[in-house]
Amino acid sequence: MTTFTPTTSSEVLSTIAWAVAEEASLEIIGHGSKRGIGRPLQTEHTLDLSMLTGVTLYEPAELVLSAKAGTALAGIEKLLAENGQQLAFEPMDYGPLLGGEPGRGTIGGVLGANLSGPRRLKAGAARDHILGINVVSGRGEEFKSGGRVVKNVTGYDLSKLMANSWGTLAVFTDVTFKVLPAAETEVTLAVRGLLDEPAASAMALALGSSAEVSSAAHLPERMAARVAGGALGSDAATLLRVEGFGPSVAYRIAALKTLLAKAGPLEEISGDVSRQIWRDVRDCRPFADGSEKPVWRVSMTPSQGHQMVLTLRMQAAVSAFYDWQGGLVWLRMEEGDPEAALLRGLLRKHGGGHATLVRAAPAHRAALPVYEPQSPALAALSRRLKQEFDPKNILNPGRMAQD
Image (cartoon, rainbow, N blue to C red):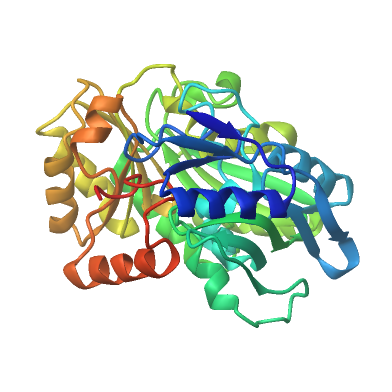
C-alpha cells in the first residue's frame, strides 16, 4: 500500500488520474479524525490530504474564508476568533468520541461530513454555509462550483451536493465558506432536575417563545456531570442558550425565567463555562469514554425523541441525551450490541428519521448498514451520482454502502 501526500491541487489531480488509469482504490483522509465512521475500507492506497494546507483567502469585511482542504479546523477557528468571527454552524469534533485527539478535523472534512453543532436549530449545517468548492472527481477531472462572494450562486447546488458525501464522489482541494460575526454575549439558562418528557415540553415552550433561543439540549441525570468538567453537577440539566448583544441577552434570559418559572429550579450560566458546556454537547463528550460501546446519532422529530428512547429502554440497556430540542438523540448501547434493527424499527414507529452508527467495533461496522438505509428511489439516485462522479469506484469504495 502506498500513501500519497499531495501538497498542491495539481498533485491531487495527478494522483487520482493515476488511480483511475490503474483502477486502484483510494482511501481519502485528512487527519483521520473521522476514520472510524462508516464501513471499514479495504483499499489499495491512501490519499492523505494533511499536507494540503493553508488559508487561501480571508476577507473579514466580506465574511468569506477560503482554505485548502487539509487545513486544520482548529487553526481556522482560532483565526476567525481573533477577528471576532466564527463558523456559525459550529462543526462537531468527532475526535474525542472516536478515541482520538481533539482538534484534528480538517475544513474539507467539515463539508464532506456536513458537520454541525447545537446551533443547527438557528444556523443550519456546513452545506448551508458553503459558497464554493474546488474538487477532483473520481474520473480524474478537476472542476469548481460556486464562488468567493456571498451573493454568488453559480453552481451552488453542486457545492451542496458534495456535502455529506464522505469522499465517495470527489476529493476537495479548496473550499470557501461564509463566516459570521461571533456573538458578543452568551448565556445558558439551565432548568434542573427534569425528566425527559417535561424537559421536552420546556424546550418546546422556550423555542416557541420570542426569546430567540439558539440552542436547546437536555442532559438526563448523571449525564450533566460529564460536561464542562462536572461544573453542572449530576442533576439533570435542560439547557437553553441565548446569544447576542449584552442588553438583549439579559432581557431574553429574564423573559425565559418568567416563562419557565414553574418548570423547575433555574440556573444561569455564562462566560467560559457556558461555552464549554456547548462544546461538550457538540462533541458528544458524555460518551467520549475511550470504549467501543456502540454510539448512535439519531435525528428525528423533536417531540418524539424521548418517547422513542423510553420504548427502546424497555428492550435494551441504553444511555441517552438530547440536542436540537430533542431532534438529535445521542445513544450509547451499554451491552455492546448495536441493536440496529430494533432502533430503526422504533424510529419508523415514532415518525421516522435517520440513525447513523458513529462508533462501534470494526466487525459491527462491517456487518450492518452504518448509515440509514435509503428508499429504493433515493438509492437509485445515489448509484447514478456515484456512476457520474466515480464510475470506476476509486474513491472510498464501500464506506457508505456495500458496493
